[in-house]
Image (cartoon, rainbow, N blue to C red; front, side, top):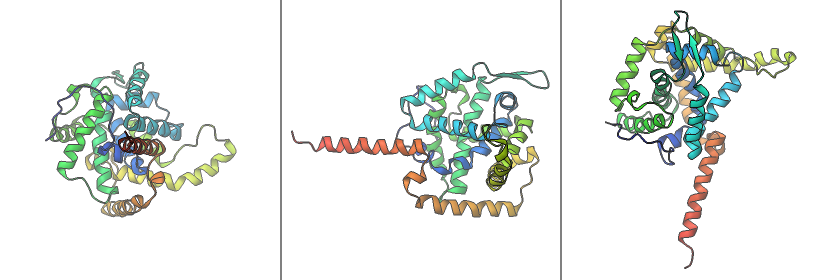
Length: 294
């Protein structure tokens, strides 16, 4: 069992599972289902639906989001600065839904839910797209790392389940009793399936974009739907057959076989690769200093 016993913010350290796995190129495979879960929350869906640019600049939004997450993990002290920047950026964001309820981006429960989808995304990625899924004890230890990440991102300690078992119970409870078939979730899924062209792309090239983006969009939509919890798919009314599940698992085995064979520069996203390279250089310097004549 992992219990939350700390409240201080501190950077994620090299050697942790977050450090080893967040920067892999497979990172994006479960970010779609995590984001869909986030915007199924009525408060998050309302605020994101009004303020996000995912409908018009999906590529730009995705690039900025990935860069931010990579900074959380690999940025050292800059990770905490990035968390502060995000917090300040979200201060003015609010939205009033169709029932007249006003939602704010920094309400403690919805803000926590955004980060509480992370353990599910990592565990699902391990189950489908790695050579070996996490065992229960590994998942509990990993959840301890995510607890630190949530503290770094200003999630209120009261919103962080104190143990992995508590997390699993809360996650299931939120899906069953809080998440809804929010319009923003459907709009996001549509933007995943038919990725809108970058705003700066000339109009003459947009038909070509639709052709080139069709297969990646279909694959991203398929993986996003397939990696959602079954109950979330049911709430959204998304069909998923046994054949679909077999196809996803076959694709996952291919990814799990291929990615470890890639050279590190291709296996990791740029920020993660550079951070790993710097850490190796620091270790090499430490060894050289230890061997210096005195």
